[in-house]
Length: 302
Ligand code: G1P
Image (cartoon, rainbow, N blue to C red; front, side, top):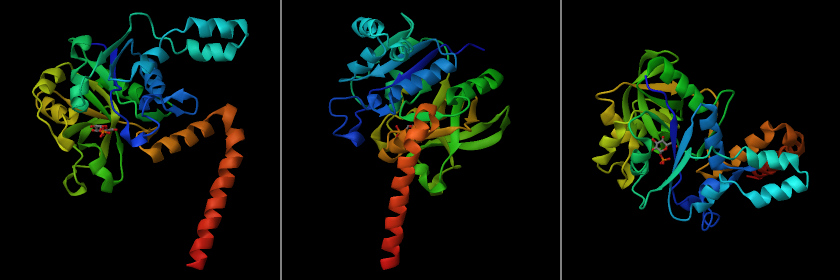
C-alpha cells in the first residue's frame, strides 16, 4: 500500500455567497476567529502526516500564496519588538520549502475539474483531498480519521457524517454496505440526490483519500449535477473497479461556505479557545437571552 504524501486543496471558487466581502478577497481567507479558513485545512493535513500541499487556485487568489510564504520584514519587526507569541503564530504557517505547489484552474467547471487540474503535480500516487470550506473540530482531525481507515483497508476512503435526511440534495451521498475496520463499504455514490432518491443520509463531508486512477476518469467525465464536472460521478465510476470505504467522522464539521455555518464556526471556535471562552461566553449568552426574550414577547402578543 502506497503512503499518502500529498494533499490537494482546491481554492479556486468565486465565493459569490459572501459578496461583497469576497469581491477582492478570496473566500478561503475569511477568518474563523483569527485564522483564515484555508489554514484549518492545511493544519488538518499536516496533522494527518501530509508532506506536500497542492493548491488549485484561480484568479485573485495570490493572497493565499502570500499567506503561506515568509515575510522577512514582519519577522524582523516582531523580533525587534519582542512579540514572541505573534512571531510563533506566523512561523507555524510556513510550509517546507519545495513542498507546496500552486496550479490554476483557469475556468470554473466544477470540483471534478479542479481536482483534475492537480494531476501532473500528484503523479502516480494516492492523495488526500480537503475541501477547505468544511472546517472540522474534533479530538482527532477528520483527515487523520480517514487516513487510519486507509492504513487498515487501503483502496479509496471518503469521510462521511449523517445529515438531515431532508437535506441530501446539498451533498454527495453514499450508500452503506458492510463494516470495514472502523468504517463501512460504500455501495454507491450520488451527487446531490433528492431525499426520495438518496441511498442513505451519510453525506461526503469534504475529506477524501483517492487513488490516482481518478484522474483518467475525470478526464472523460461528463457534466453532472448543476452542469458541473462532479468528482462524485467520477468516484462512482472508479468504484466499479476499486474499493471505496467510508470513514465516519465523530467530531464536528462546520460548512463555512454558508453564512450560518460560518457564524456558527466562529462562535464554536471562540468558545473552544481557553484565551477567549470567558471573554465571549457572557456577551453571547446575553445576546441569546435577549433574543429569546424578544421571541417570547412576540409569541405572547401573537
Ligand atoms: C462538494 C461535493 C459534495 C460534498 C460537498 C461537501 O459539493 O461535490 O459531494 O458533499 O462538497 O461540502 P459543493 O459544496 O461544492 O456543492
